[in-house]
Image 1 (cartoon, rainbow, N blue to C red):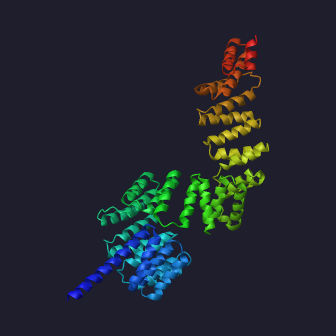
Image 2: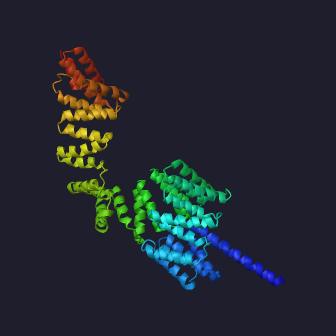
Length: 524
């Protein structure tokens, strides 16, 4: 009797240990530590052969999450060979065929459901997750909700379907229902803090651009588990979206430290480095990935951009040549045309480069900022009408863009259309009332419209230049001299020597050798 009891206890202890190992592997998967999880499941294949078919599913699931579809299918099929009644592997086959053949995928899911009790929770949860992670249409996420609601109806205290239900509602953009599901999961955890739920709440707020709440939840999750890699990834993505690239990179580096390194993650890291303008390091990683035969269509694009920013224009153009020959027309972005065009311009192939900038504008009609680059080309050719055409389009599209207004005013000025430049620079003074540029070129335009100073048209505008320049006389020394000279000549034309001499003396204070001022003082 004692012997039998001892054997029973030993067996129970062994089963508990196996269950603990399985739970540990599941946590590794959650934290994207796939190598550690794979090692545990492979060990369980040997130590617990009765459940080998189930472990094959989990090995296939890891391969599927790593986008290793051939390996995933191999494990799922091995599981089926071992036990045709193990429903999980049919779920796996459905997951692996979801993107390529939804009809066959659905059949596999249905077969899995048919093999288990209506009260089984694991199978519908796994199917729901497949719809959430692979889905592209509203109907996919609705199906996930349906599966999960049935599970919850049978077992209201089960936590995992509540979390997945929140994910599904998030995909459906139903934020209040998403929050309700996550809150129910937290309640069922008896308020025990969960890094996973902190991650979920953080993502939910990040998706509605509530930066502060997203960061709050992510940091709370890391306080619970500083090794929880996926949270660092989400923080990196969030900081990147808000153009806080230094913080994005720091968090992505922490992400890399706490998960199994893989080439997809390293590629994304290279992208973050590019965004933060660390082009040298980004290029180094791309080179390493290329040497390792990393296959990703986006490599060509990112490498072309990085090489452009590094000033390696010829190499950048080679990458763009590959991009244009391998990508479908609908896959080519406005930025592709833009960077290729700018690389051509930098390579002294300006005419060809401008054509690509024009293609970029055709691809994305909102890219009015490119008008300036195109206009610059026409200005160099002294084709002012074409330059004016593009800059007018830019200003009409964004009347409050001071740089566009300034560029248009300059072209009118150098084209000799002083009436138009006067009008445009007037607009600039309204947009930027504390900037000297608008007033200075408005004054110069008015000076050209009144070359003999018959009306002193530019006098009050030059006086405004003087007012603004007074805050930094050293910086605006030339502008002040120009203004005093104009006003001095104006008083000369008015035969007002007293006021004219005041202006000439102001010039000499800034430039003691100024001939115009010296001659002005000698005039009677």
